[in-house]
Image 1 (cartoon, helix red, strand yellow):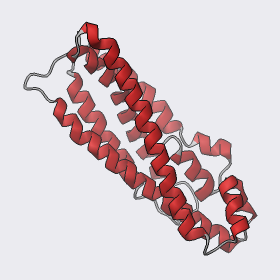
Image 2 (spheres, one colour):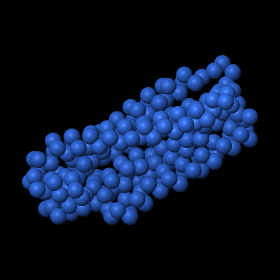
Image 3 (cartoon, helix red, strand yellow):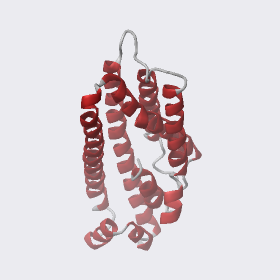
Image 4 (cartoon, one colour):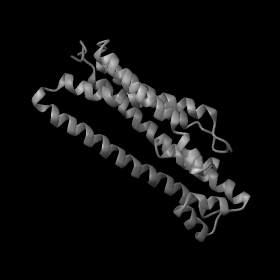
Amino acid sequence: MIVNIPQRAQTVYGVSPVQGGLTLLPLLLTSPLATALSGFLTGNAKVPPFYLVLVASVLQVIGIGLTCSLSTDSKSIPKAQYGYEVLMGIGFGLGLTTLLTFARVVVSQQNLSVMMGALTQIRVLGGTVSLAICAAILNNQLTLKLDRVVSPEQAAAIYDSISAVNDLNSTQQAAVRLAFAEGYNLQNIFMTVMSALGLITSFFLWERNPRKAG
């Protein structure tokens, strides 16, 4: 989503790169706040990490899932998108440190460093693979759509730089922006499925008497 949101803002809604980056603020601001809240709840309030992981997973599914409903023919950024980002930010922030806290609870001290390293590697690997899959989804969508509305030279220019869309006539711009919007929605569907799988797997962390940190 960190890549999807600003790119969508530039290609679909025609905003500048700076404005595209600013569209991420609701997600980026709420995520660290949720991370701090996670530390308080697991450390001070002694809330079992399992419950926070579950809540985080649910919020991620809802937030990302709602982005699939974004209109493909809107000419401006929907206000609802910022609300979806807040849900995602809270979900990402809660899940980010809670899993590390959970690891300290369930793994022995001598194996803790191995577990921390494994979690970090899995996150990086998962992000890299998902990014590659999302890029393939978007490229396939564009390949199917762009050939019908622009020349090969224009398509190549668009692949090289998103700003090339602005050099097209109004009819072509509308068709290209629609193709990008549909591609980003397909990406969101894929990420929603992945988040749903994460929610399902989080239930396997359940214990009859959930352990607490500290």
